[in-house]
Image (cartoon, rainbow, N blue to C red; front, top):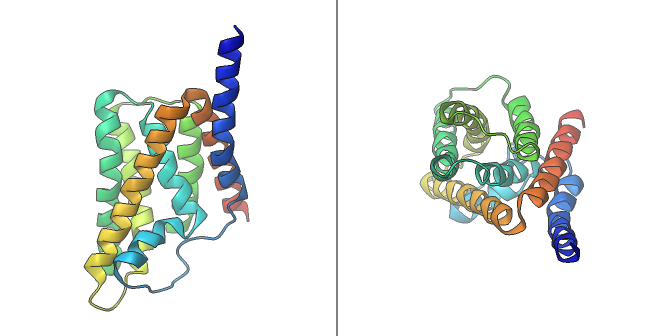
Length: 196
């Protein structure tokens, strides 16, 4: 009994850094109209705003609680749908309510993690695709006008995939309780961002 309690305490302490990051992240959105260029700018873009960073980690946390098939393809679907959103934005196609959908993605993905929600694969895929299109729009609106567009696309796609992987690894290592605590922190941070 003592060992089990100590194990739970260790898991709780592992969740604290993720929760602190979620709660301390301000409403600094990553889509402020800046135009950066190149691979490095693309890599840094998803971590330059709390909304993108938390949503990407939450995708990994939530995916880790899904069945083995969904666990593999849900995190892969997000960057692909995000690229479509970015290409659409670069082509002048605007998604209505982009900012609200991005904020909502942080809250919803956090709550899905809190409750370890499992849904049919098609429903989870549609939900993630909708959120990914909004995040992609934000990235696409800030696509550089110079010749480094491809590198920028590759950069933010790679960073997104790495953040998904980080969320999955954290969930697998820390366990379900710690993931739920982190998910709650993410959802609260997302709510604050939307209200700020």
